[in-house]
Length: 116
Image 1: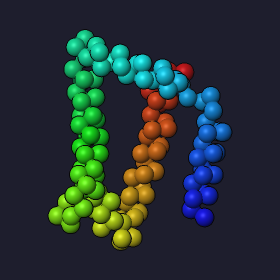
Image 2: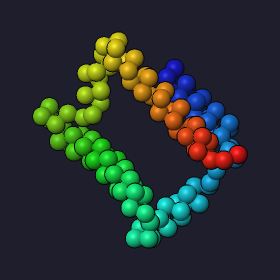
Image 3: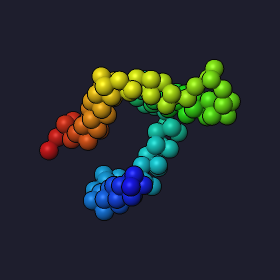
C-alpha cells in the first residue's frame, strides 16, 4: 500500500509539474557549473552561502555513508537520532511543522521575491 501511494504521488508530481519548472534540468546544471567556474567574480555572500550548503549536504551524506559502512552503535545513522525525537507526539508535531514550513518556504520563496 505504501509503495503504491508513493508511486501515485510520484506520478502526480510528474503529470502536474510538467512544463511548470522555471528552468530545465540541463539549464540548471549549466547555470550551476557557470557559478562554480566564476566563483571569484561573485559577491562573497553568494560564495559563502554556496559553500555552507555544500559542506552541510556533504557532511550529512558523509555521516550516513560512514555509519552505514561501519554498522556500529557507536556511529548511529541520522535516522536513529530523528527516530529518538519523533517517538514522542511533540517531536512528531515539531518535525511535521518543520516539514510544512520548509515546503511553504520552497514553494513561495521565489514568488515573494520576484516582481510581478
